[in-house]
Structures are given as C-alpha cells and as structure tokens.
Length: 267
Image (cartoon, rainbow, N blue to C red):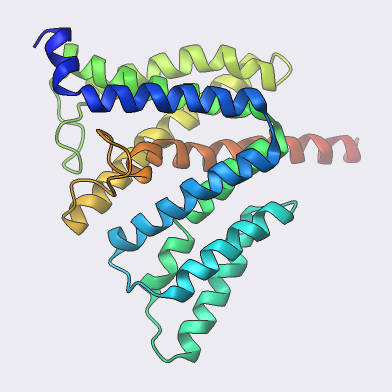
C-alpha cells in the first residue's frame, strides 16, 4: 500500500492525531496548572467511563460522583495520587454498607485513576518539561514499533496483541531510549546515565500499557475502549501507553528526588 493509499484509508485517524498533537502542544505551551488540571480531568472522566465497560462493572451513579470528587481532591492536594487511595476506600465502604460488595467495582479507581493522577503529579512536581519528555518517549516507542514492525517484523511479540512483533518492540524501544536519554537530561541536570535508565523504564512501561489495554479489550470483547476520538477509539485507546509511562516516570523521579534529599540530610 502506498503512502497516499494508507493516508486515505486511515484519513480520520491521521486528522484526529494531528489535532491532538496541536492541542497538546498548545496546552503545554500555555503551561497553566488550572487549565491542565481541567483538561486532564475531562479526559480522566471519559477514561473512567470506558474503564467501567472494560472491567464489566455495574454502572452506578455513586461511582461517577466519587470520580468527580477524586479529581477535585487531586487538584487541592499536594500529593494527588493519594486521592485515588482515599476514594477507593470510600467506594469499598459504600459497597459493603449496601451489601453489594464486588471487588471489580474498585478497579476503575485504580486504573485509570492512579495513572491519570500520576500524570498530573508529574506536571505539579517536575514541571511541563517532564511531560514533554514522557510524551516524546512514549510516542517514539509506539512509532518505532509500528514502522519497525512493518519493515523488519517476523517474530510475534505476544498472543495478547498478535499484530505486534518482537523486532518492532525492540526497534521502538531503542529509538525512544536513544532520543529520550538526551531529552531527559534537561530535567536531570545533564545526568545522561539516569536519563537513559528512566527513558528505558518509561519505554518498557509504554509497551506494557499498550498490551494491558489490548488485554482488557479482548477480555471484554471490544474493538475499542470508546468512540470519542475518530480513527483512534476512546481516551484509553490513545493514552494507554502514556498512563503506564506516567506511573513509572513519577515513581522514579520522585524516588530520585527523595533519595537525593535523604542523602544530603545524612551527609
């Protein structure tokens, strides 16, 4: 298939992708905390709704209400991720009180709630440059895997996603880490080795995030998690790799920051 034929057959996908890239660039350029909190919050609520379908949860007004409260608390809390833990506890108590406890109902407060909160926490704790680093590493992992798989792919990567190849995954990982290592140095005072390790971990997490979303869809017998994004499906279809990468990035950067502060106190 020629490039022109490929574009025409996936026209809506490419147009939506371009619009998303432009919107992302504009939002990050503005670099305003309330704006980013609001945009991420809207995406989170759509993702939360999609997760309810993927997990096969019983839809309940209380779940949506708690999801909104969760995001409001995240905006008011210096440590946003803890909002998910608190709300998950509240939901568990509510289900127990109503004598309709089903552990599955808690899952949407873990995924995608915690990853979305981790994404917001990265912005709050490490700034907009770290978000750029994350997005670029994830995007390169995905793009490299796609085109690398098309050109050199022979070995199936996993039954979870039969179209992906081991060669594509390795090429995507290599490209993402090679470029991401230099980009990450801007957030790490020029430390290439740490940037390399974090970029590697993010890229691997992005691959796992994509596989996890594929697994959920296959288990739920759904082609896409939603249909809000023409050519892409739902919010989770588009952000699955970013969400897993966000958890890894925040954990490692926060761990590094805490370790440095602790070391200085000890010294």
